[in-house]
Image (cartoon, rainbow, N blue to C red; front, top):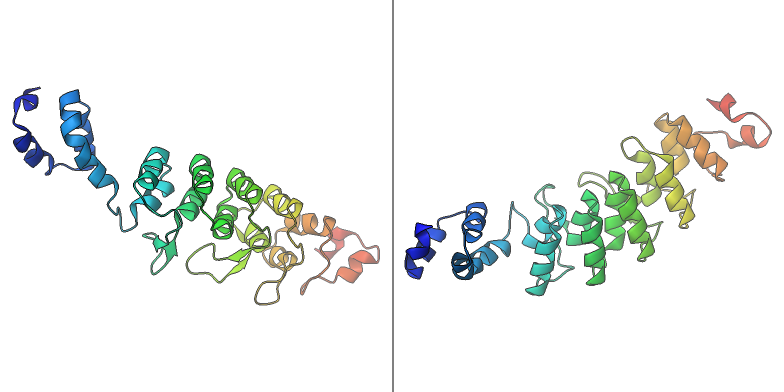
Length: 235
């Protein structure tokens, strides 16, 4: 490649006008170019991207090698950063990785001391990322933790988000219950998961919660069930 014959000073001037994608392609063209230009690519790696910190961006997009590089360069694993996808909100690398279901990144961040397991569990539950939920619960997340699943919602317990999420499934709810979640936990309005399922006409979730011992409800007369009436007579 003719560029290899250019003086290093001129190569650096030209490379500074390239974006990270083109710069990476140029570096891969030859070892001589790699030695000279790789430091420039590292400079791109540590810069904020799309309005959020480099570490959060890398975690959200599942770029584990870049996450490792940034932490090696001294980035703090638990630093809160602005979230480019939620106005006036902050996030962490662990939450970003959990939200998108990047299991490898989640495990690595936890191994480096990431501790916002509750916030990460809330978004993982709401997004339906079952494998990530298991990892977080295995690493100390409380199945009864509270948090915001989206920026425009109030804080609620994890089990509420499991019922409220789009297309809720029994497996997620059962996972939280198996890990000690209170089946009758109330949110800030005094509503239980059973009430949420009832109000959303999720009969199969109502059935699951009742079969697992749900006892409190604002909307359902549980006395009818406990007095021997069929569950389906209440629908």
